[in-house]
Length: 215
Image (cartoon, rainbow, N blue to C red; front, side):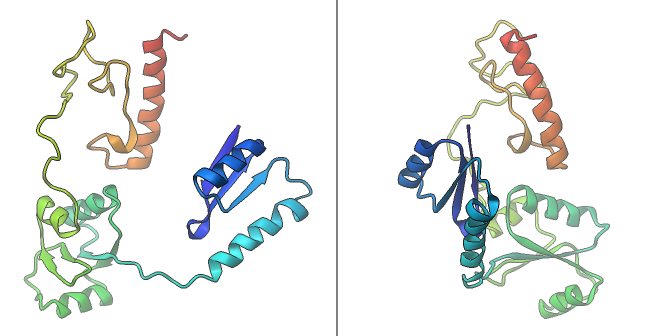
């Protein structure tokens, strides 16, 4: 069994019990370091590798983070919706409360007075959007808002999608292909992503076992 992870600074590290897997990882995916279990004594086989990676990471120059600025009110539903949209689409952003000094400064710099609507979005290129729609916000941060293909399979409320091949209605979380279940970030309308992913993941496993006839 092997376990792979990405170390700090984007330098891959492989934890494994298989020397062949480590060699293959070095040749195929350009792994920088690997550790073979067991790594005892750790002061000889584990700590020096971690120390070297930390030293390499801290020695790298800081990378400027390009992020969108979002100014809103903490109890505002539209402000929360904008934050949720950016987070769900993995768009780097920084939140500023409109009633705090830095938020007020940004609003004044954008020439927005007391009659402003919230939220206000300032993109990395300096463009300002006031109370944007979801489509306007998506376009401003570089997300795609047009379909890539002409036709998609869509499963709505358990009804059978086009091309459904099973002699039954789809089960909860089942995709347009019978026996394929989806959960987590590939599902729509999951506001609390972590909790939704955990709960839906457990449900998907149960339904997959049911589909396979497992006890």
